[in-house]
Length: 390
Image (tube, rainbow, N blue to C red; front, side, top):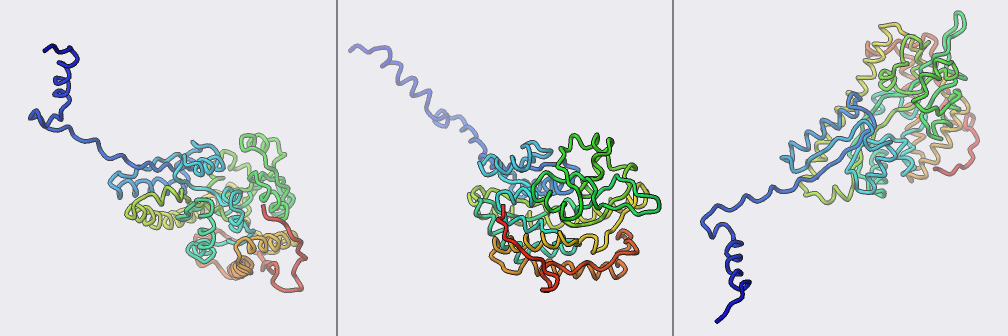
């Protein structure tokens, strides 16, 4: 009987391909289970307090999952602007990141609630928001965009760094100051109502514009200003207006989260619940440390405007319209105005009493009680026209 060469070789190749255990050799080690990537974006470098929260959060998740989840921190704008990073997250190319309230508001207009003028003007008011019914409502609304909000951090309260010299014997004023503000239509409108002449000049051109004198101020928080080269002895004053709080919101991809095991989900939520409140406190303490440094080194004076300087008639009218829009989006009539009234009353009380914390910056002696809040009484209420939320 004749056999072709392929037929004779077939049994040999089958024998070679048999599992090694049949030859008396140890079986090969199976490959390790694939890990789960968790890419996290942040706009700033690792020296900013809220970015440091991501570092601690990533470490807690990796260690707690025995490296089954591998967070990767993409800080310093590696994913571009916050807007670009958020789009990447929507597309599934990122698992999470920190985003400002302004950035989230472009996708979820209800998050503009957090940019209501003077809604938060004290650290304790910031802390009280976290876990409040208003917080719960915003978190629920975020799910409609496939976002799971796991907590908050901060880059501080906004103020105005003033480079315009005051007249002889006068206190520097921020009124009518040509000031650079974040490039956002709401920020332009808000700061016009506050009494500034806002400009959305690109940050790359800022130092030259300040030197030339046609930008006379910068609206930002102490932590961000402290990192900038122009925040030096050339400034005339820092106006501690606290007219906005710089909320940073930690959001992850909801579908990605739902694909994890219950144990992994619990690990991530517990890590966020541990790290983020501590980081929020660190951010607020860091701001106070910077203010104390500025005050002690006497580079420029720190001015605390009175309530009458801040709550101007245009700002009251704008706040009233804005609050009504936000309450409609939140389906919570009166919620924003009530919180505004409550927090303004607390701020007024604080201005009339000596600060209990000795580390608080010195207030101006001529600080006065703030103007009545928008919508508080029929006599002071401004007429309101409807405006479509963005």
